[in-house]
Image (cartoon, rainbow, N blue to C red; front, side, top):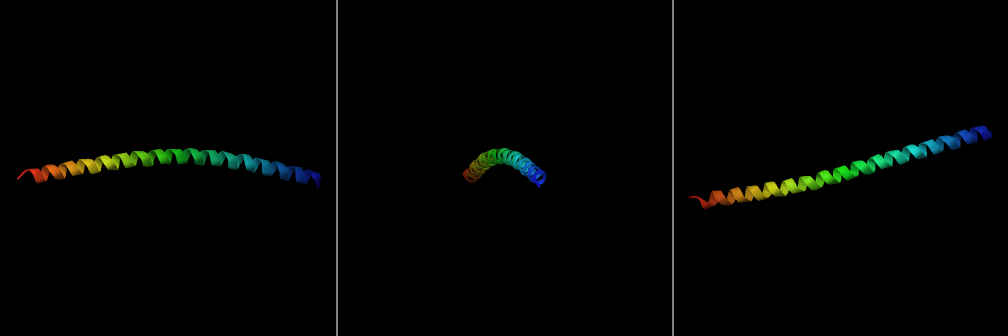
Length: 62
């Protein structure tokens, strides 16, 4: 019975280590995703600014 409990404890420990590794990977992906979102917002703002400038130029010329 003690051997089974020892094996079970080892399996739980292994799973705990694996879950920790998955959490670290998810944290890394979250940081990359946050960076992507930040870059996308900058690109969107630039596009809006350029479009505003183009619209302004088209209304300035008769």
